[in-house]
Image 1 (cartoon, rainbow, N blue to C red):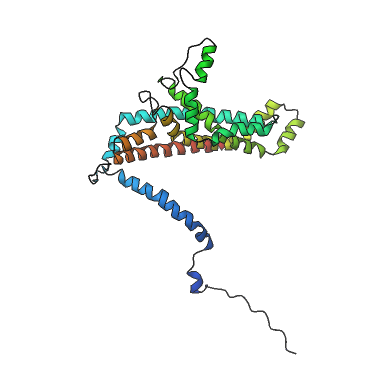
Image 2 (tube, rainbow, N blue to C red):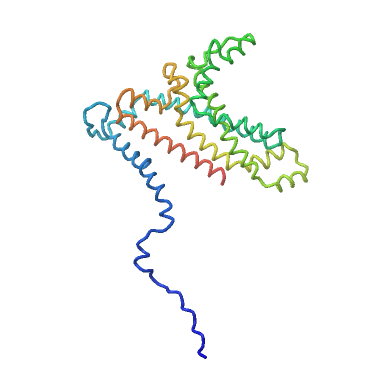
Length: 305
């Protein structure tokens, strides 16, 4: 009886040419996303950059190449810098409460308030509403004669406020609307971070006799430092891009006192028909946003170190 033959050893070396012709499975799975990303992100960016170097408009005449003239005009445009100032002011007065209020709301729910699902729904539900519904609702609340807020002020013996027609008040009213509308998203992020904190830290603190406030200041807030940085960066970027609620509530008024830079781009491009100049303003603002984001991330990394 002959000895059993050894099992053939697996072939090693270069795979056959037929196998090398096919891309990797990962690339095949990512290909639909890459195609959509190139069509709807990369190509518009390239097209917009080229448009910013021309005098293209909505008129019939063909565009001509003007180089950096649009950028030079944008840097010297006082109205553009005024709209940038409005955008920065809105970002400052909206980001701080959107972070702090969301943190307080998450802490209240996490501590075990009765009926937690009701509080979670109440805090997060406004974020699900479309901007048109939110703006219409708050337009009625801000009505000078029939609005709820002025009715409450009058019942207290105080004069009503021109919420959306007073230049010194309008941007604060828009920030209040934005706070009510979008704070639920930050609340959800904070609540998820709180639920992931390790319990043994609180158990050790309780054994050492630390009270609730001491645990909050020594354990909870330091552990939330990273998610606070993420929320702050996301909120700053979202506030810098503000447009919808401003346009629906005030259309940039009164007297342009609330017009953000995105609305200025819209006005220049689709009201003034100067698409090339509007594209240049967009890229100038994009560069400012990138610089602000890099500075913010650098500051958070240094603080962590």
